[in-house]
Image (cartoon, rainbow, N blue to C red; front, side, top):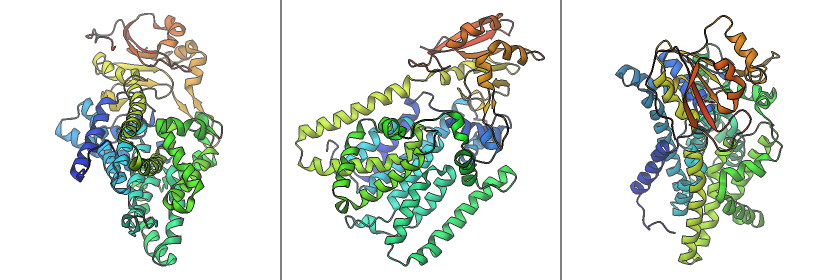
Length: 505
């Protein structure tokens, strides 16, 4: 392998931590609303008393565990007077990066301290892109990786796998409460553990599984019930709304094969090649690849289950990343022992470049405008300002990045719940911006600041008479729907003059 021999644990941990913290400062782009609206915005309202929460938090389908951790950070900042916007944004991401670093180190130990495994996890473009984000899937993936490193595999290859360690069950319960999407993985691994345990199956279930599930699950139910003010079991509510009632389809539908043809290939990138190689080996010689066969079975069930759910996203594949990278290194390592040095350098170089290019583009350029606009709004606003976002739902963060107790207005897109009509205000607005504006401001003043994508500009120009353009910020080279190349900020001419910050290039 290209990496130096004899890496010490402290060296490995330091390198991993450096890469993960580095990603916090290099990744400066918007990915999905949940990064902010399901964690930071909730915590901000908890601690500072003002903010906005989405429909999920009114219907009990999200656990308060992760937002409460962020809220603890915010509380310390609040009472020390250090609640600067930059601190509110960066510290939760740094905490998540540290958790992801722990997961990476666990993954490295799980593979038997293999340097190729370390190389793959550190260079994975999608993990670099998401490991420092406050996404529920990021924390879920970290818990999956750590749990897999503790799971009692029965391969006979390494003593490390033979340990009966129940700690993985605690982590599995936590992962399911944070986001239940990893449940198919634990169903397969749990069944395997019960079938191959060194102790009696009933004994293991009654003395280990059941107590852990009751204690960990009960504590999390108590936490969520306290915040919601009623008895709530969030994994059940998540399943009921998103699967039984198919609420998720309201936000988009994809064909059944989407994860196979687009989702997994995009997330893996160039690492798809060794993963396919590994899958081929497992299918040809399953008895010689017992761990690989088990992991592949878990991954296949996961993909099969979520392929039948119409709404699909790239991030939903994230919990499978530790499994796929384990399979990849398990074929690269035997090959590398026989390969010539120039082969090693060539493969390592291709993997590095193949991951660095998408990581650099998506982390620094693609969809950067909706984050870069937030500090500019803070500069342009004062305590009496009002801001309206004429953009698709939740296109920007809100109070967690503004940290100003000002009036804000954004377009809503609540789905139909329990037979109610949907409140897809965004669709009504884009169908007829003029009518929406007249209705909205029939009895209230127009906002001091208006934020929109430039695609909308020609359709609302007559509404913005009396406004001046103060910022035009590049956002994406791949416009889609109502999301376009640049983010525009307009300021009402009669607003108190503010120092105009130069446009972001």
